[in-house]
Image (cartoon, rainbow, N blue to C red):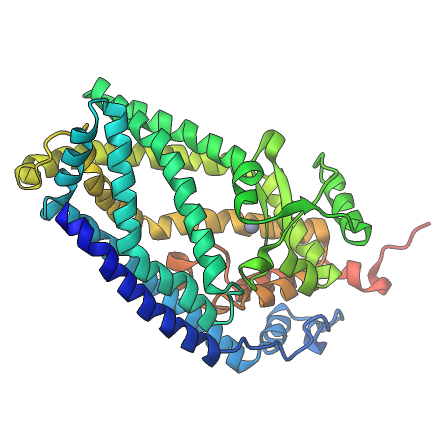
Length: 449
Ligand SMILES: [Zn+2]
């Protein structure tokens, strides 16, 4: 265990250096404040006989200051590279654990401590998570602290941020302590069919995590409470009831504790299903914008997106396990002697599992994004029809453009976007507005007898 002894002191030296860098970055980059009042519908987007969706979209796009656009483009494009760096960094880390024999030593250490297999796996798991978290920390720190501050998106100082990181680590550790030994038990018991039973167990655990997440996990990090302002909740609940959503509550989350981003979401299902707005949206969004966003979120519910997402997940999980069944066997037969790992049921195989899963998910990035993006597009269209707030919807697209590139090329959007781009969202809203002119021009309303 010599190697692990020396790591922490080095890591802390690096951390101290990064903290100094972070402080200088924080001072250097104040967030860009919005300069235009985006709640004023621009002339080219006003209803009328000459209304043109392309021109209306351009009018909204030109409300975004050039400096803000440059900043969000740079932020989002930097994210493309981070997908690659995250993947490469983690892969190298896992390869080091295998190639240096460290993974095997970590297992031997656990075996010396106890003869109970279940506990051996838990100890190995704790060692593995500790070492990967420490070694992965510099990139994590840059990506989620330094960079978020640099672009004016983060609101947390170092202490609370580290607190959240610590909590996330403990939550992951507890979940892994239950889940990983269970999987190893399955692998040991069903030598040829473990990938089938492992898939089923993984799916069941995912369903449980999705169901309990908003109720039990979210409150560990944020305060989630019922929204009590009837001025905001009344139109939202009317919209919900008109679309067959049997809820009498809207929830709010104090996301401003961590970030300036505006968002809302639908989470859980059955009894734990809920609509949550973040407080940035409540504070900065106009009533039209909030209704437009809520229409979108209700679309996720009415169109059963949580269930569809789980069905997609079943396919991904089964495919991943089949790939691991084949890939782990292949890699261990080639390099098992060198790594001192010979069985898939040996906990020391975990770096290889993560390495191979990382490769698969890296390759699947566009497929995964496209699957989510098509649901988001559906929810957009549902939301426009339900809330009838195309201008509020355009405002939301501009606000979300603070951290997403507004107008990417089609291939770029296909690979990297898990939501339609801001430009496409405004364009959809303006096409919808053009096709529903009777709602905005009293003269076009059908005469009532
Ligand atoms: Zn959505």
